[in-house]
Length: 413
Image: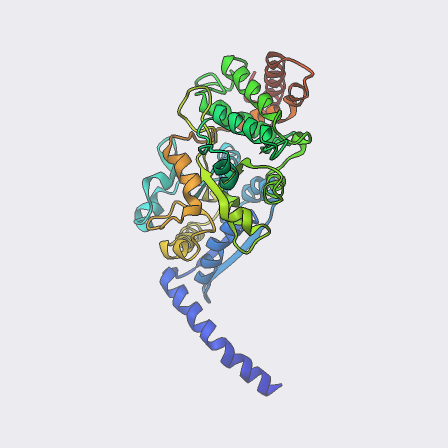
């Protein structure tokens, strides 16, 4: 036993040495860093680095769970909060803001944020409330071999997507060459949001929670979504992003509008379908109706610091997270995400997201009642997609369902 312990100690010495170096680089003297996060690999990259800030006087622990959204408000309401850091995104920050559970970060940005870019600072009313470190969006994944064989240029607009789908069908290659995440619920609502943003549509009256989607832009979006389904597998209302990946890599569809965060599994040369991965083309989300805005909302992921923690824990938490999102970390994991971190050298696999951003993609609306609108869209558009009601009636149903939820939540009288 003594020999085994001695051997183990020798083996652990290099790890302890490296850990001590990392803790010294973090520069944190004391504090408790407690992180609540979604359980996705890209966030894990940052958290694994932040853990290196642990020392005899600095405690770092993390909870990665897919249930993070349902527990974050209650966990940060307790005083002191269970977590000092909440990993948040475009749609998970607003509930914390509405409940007054995050603290301004400008003091820490000034002291420790010299490497932050201005577009990483998420500001509300002039105050920095979160730090973004990765971007995400949907964009086109296409079978380059099929398009090339038919002499078709990669589509840039939805009309070109439909034209390409028609040509693929008429050539007898695929009966249903298109796929999109239209599963009834969140995904279906998300597709409406993507397209409506590209038309410059406004979801609410300015300065109000009153809905404004029952209009010509809303009808145009629904008509496009319906037209797309003619070239999609008949079970389109059940398709999630994971289903798109399987259909695409199984060779059953040729053009999909997929999340950039899933690009690696589509391009993996050692993955499920290397022959398809090799020929896959990436392009920005298509535009719609003669407009030049890509039809895909821009999303970000980042972190915020809890209000109900000590100043010592808040500062330690900010510094640990900054250590976790160094440029060296991003470049050691270039394919893990489309990093917003200064000094990140983006690989080709990130081009779909970056080109969508650079082409003028609009951010997903970040207000406390957008989640209710998204839920109403997801629940009320199914009848239209199944041909059971008009576009105008579907949009009226969405607004009615939204108003009911908004009144219950106190956003509308």
